[in-house]
Figure 1 (cartoon, helix red, strand yellow):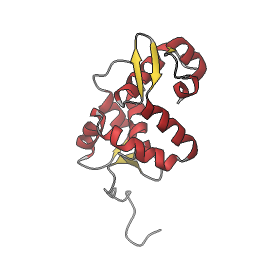
Figure 2 (tube, rainbow, N blue to C red):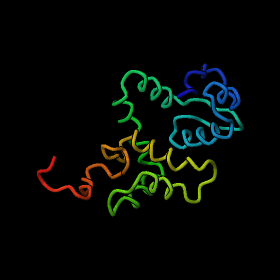
Figure 3 (cartoon, helix red, strand yellow):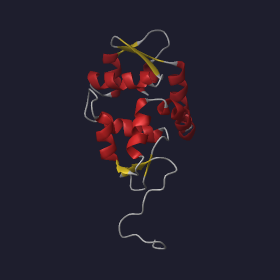
Length: 155
């Protein structure tokens, strides 16, 4: 989390400085920081951002123990509106990740990739899982249907 690297705990980081640090456009950084604020990992306000204590803890844990960081993120992501939306879309079974991203993106402002980012964050947070080929998304604990042409006992 680039904000944690720039955060001194003294004052908020300006969007332009953060955008330059992570190599993204200011609008993209703004969208990302709004999302991180929704998860309570950052505080956003008037073009400047500060990492929360929870965000700092997550960033530090991510550097040393990613499985633990993913478990820390899980309840935050499950409380986000996108988790309920994904569960509703996946209730009938797995979907191609691009389709789930498109469904989640519907009606959202900002970059078209926003739906894909939501799928990726949910996968990181263990809210959804991807198949081994990383093409389809399903809810944890739901065994995806076998691929066409597969039959029991075939490896």
